Image 1 (cartoon, rainbow, N blue to C red):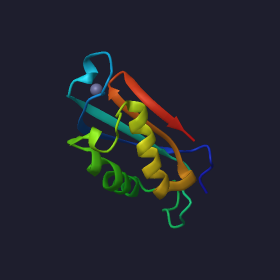
Image 2 (image 1 turned 45 degrees about the vertical axis):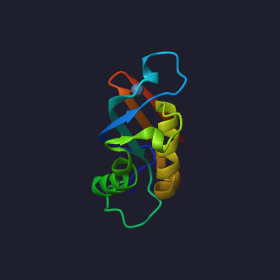
Image 3 (image 1 turned 90 degrees about the vertical axis):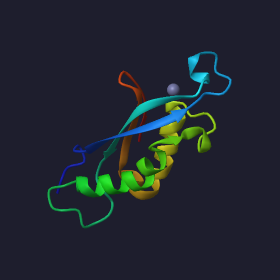
Image 4 (image 1 turned 120 degrees about the vertical axis):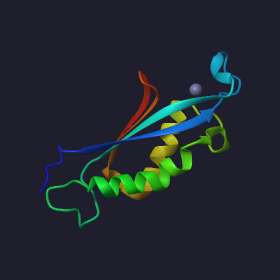
Length: 122
Ligand SMILES: [Zn+2]
């Protein structure tokens, strides 16, 4: 049995466009980002994980790609998120991933640039 202190994280990359309506600065204009998403998982609630694993990285990848990355990659985020700041993107991603991972979802981090990110923690 893996102890609760062990979590696993997978990193994903995607491209997106957005604009921040009403913002006083360059980000009010349509522009693009190379986004990075990190998803951290703790004890998984579904039985069947391979012995010695919190979750199979392959399963983590499949779920996050299907329900998050495929929806965001090369999309205009204002179509789904009215004010697509890194903070609001993070909340939207958490909402989606909690459906699949429940309480096993421990942390979600969305980098808008290499040195700026928003983070949610359980
Ligand atoms: Zn931006």
